[in-house]
Length: 435
Image (cartoon, rainbow, N blue to C red; front, side, top):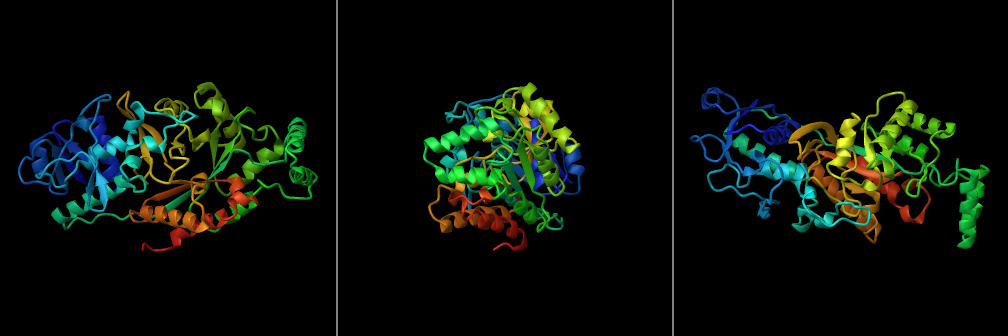
């Protein structure tokens, strides 16, 4: 166990140290404000305060973990060996930066509470982030800093054996529309037909009715392919089905249709099932609760996770709604147009509510690549290179790589022609050693 001496034990301090020490490094941690208890401790120990007590392992603290509320925090980013960091803390400190304060800044999404420019859907964009503007979006810096901290501890406590964690993957399958043509109402089918006629898309009309009459497979019906892939790997996929009411933004199958319900149940025999919240559920607790109960009635068990439509988050309201409904995990946080680490980490963490200064029970799983983010690269070779780079950055810290692909990504559309290969790269990454 690591004992931390500090002048004040705060919720922010407990939250950050437990994330870095326990969840990333696998070391239990406790805290004390009593010098005599610190001196008596015979195993791992360190002081985290303004000045060292003596010659102990000491990291000089920034004020951030001892404050409440939001303030105008200066975040001047500097190069640190093979990475970057902020909150420098002087020569006496065992590390040149306060990695705990810096980690809290990123994990709490402190910058997303500050004034920023949103996109057309009201989302926080990568271009507004500290990581993007300082060139470390592609690095899981919180995990990298944690392992630098571990190296420093190993130098001081050479007999202590640190546990090792294993690289893993969590493939997310987003299902905003299970089928392109199947199970659609007569009105939607007629409307789609007239739309194709108006745009002279005669091939689409032929395809639509070939699917409806059973002569062709629906282009979005890739579930057998995905489940076959699930059978080949030990890490569980998680499917997020949209079952909200039809609207301008949400156009999935009616959740009352028995064949759609059967599909969700069949997928649930092999993979985890989560709820893709509808667009209007994002800010409406009542709608979100209805959709949660609807999904639980289909899968006959408590909902394990959610994902917000359009990867939209309104902090802290979006997460407070999930906490209110006792949804344990969320997979929304990430950037739709950029590969990288929105919260600076490849380790799941708990949502810290900055307004109430508490750690909540909601577990946040950030995704690191969305299929749409790869579209910005022109060639298949470039897409593959960038995908491999981000996987390698997670493997270097034995983290958890989370990708988001859609069911239609594995269809026959020319747009997604190489994405089965990219998905295989992710699945096969667990069989390779770090290079």
